[in-house]
Image (cartoon, rainbow, N blue to C red; front, side):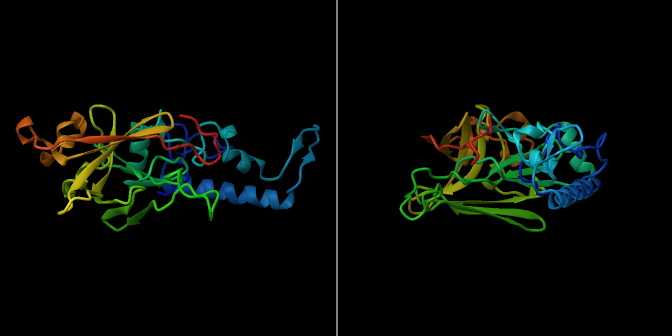
Length: 284
C-alpha cells in the first residue's frame, strides 16, 4: 500500500463526506480515489472563488485542497506525521488488523523527513513492514552554489520492492554506503539486516546497516533516536544491538544473545539535521 503521508487509527477506511469506515483496503482505495476524481471535476467546473446562496465563499475541489493541509485534522492520508517527538512508532492494532484482513503486509509513505536513510518499522504482532522514505533533508550543509534548495548533497537512498523482499541501499553524507535486505517473512532475514526496523530499550530504532571505512570493511548497525527535529545517530556492532533489543523484538532465535556474546563496542555521533517537512508546518 502506497500513501503520501501514512495511515493512522483516525484515517484508515475513512472517505471524506461518508459515514463509517470501508471494510477493506481495496474498497477504501476505490472510494477514496473516486472522491478525489469528483473533487477534481468540481475544481475544473469552478476553479475560481464564488459565493454560494448563503453568501459563503466557496471554490470547486476545496475539500480535496483541505485534505492535504492541517485543516483535514487526523483523517487525512496525505497530511500525516508518523513520528512522535521525532521517533517512529508501531501502527495501532486496529490499523494492523485492517491491513492484515486485506492482505496488506507492506506500507510505504513519505511526507515527513527523518535523517539520511528511510525509516523502517517492523510489527512483531502481525508482521507488517512499514517504511517511511522521505530523506529530503538529509544534509542541510550541502553546497547551495548550483541549487539553493539542495538539502541532500551526495546523500541518496533507493527502496526497491521485490516480490518477497525489499532492498534498501544508498550513501550517507560522510561518504559511507548503507544497505539492507528485508523479507516479507522476517524469519528469512539474516543478521545484521534482521535488526533493521526493530527498537532498542533506550527508545531508538535500527535504521540501516552501514559499511565502515576499515579494511576489510565491517558492517555496523546504525540506530536513530529522535528528539523533536534532531536525530542522534549511533553505530554499533550487531551483538550490541541484539543485546539491547526490546523483548517484543527478540522473538527470532538468532536475535537472542547473552552478555557472553558481547564482543563489540558502539560509537555515537549526534546529528542536528533539520527534519521538518518542506512546508515547515508538520509538528511532532
